[in-house]
Length: 159
Image 1 (cartoon, one colour):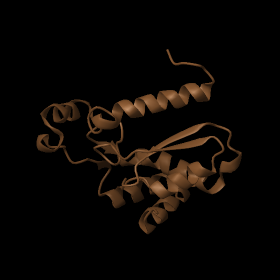
Image 2: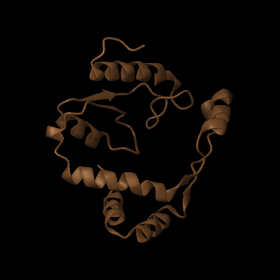
Image 3: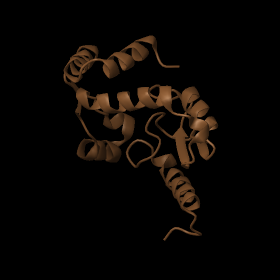
Image 4: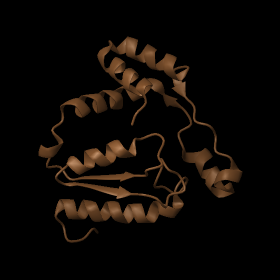
């Protein structure tokens, strides 16, 4: 379940004029940019730490979060999940502290063509695929996603 702060900020960000919403998010996050903590080599290993330093985004503009916040708020309050015919694959870890697993599972369960892949074997609970943070689950997630996409597209195999 999202925190009360997130619930309040999400609706305020949606309802306020754009400039005021940007200001609200900057106050909530302590500035115009979010800077994730650098990953140490002793946590990731030297090779993965080097990949992180080279390829990972190190600064996120807080204002960019307004678009997904608005999308989540609008869809969450207006979308009729039961009538959505679009195939949806959600990959989620119950221990993720960024995305609410129970909300994800509940939404996917309402989708006629929704599938939930519970990921428990990833080294990271939020980033569940990729060579840097989740090399152990990356290949399986790629295979699962391609299998889902080929089935959803109605083709017999993926080139």
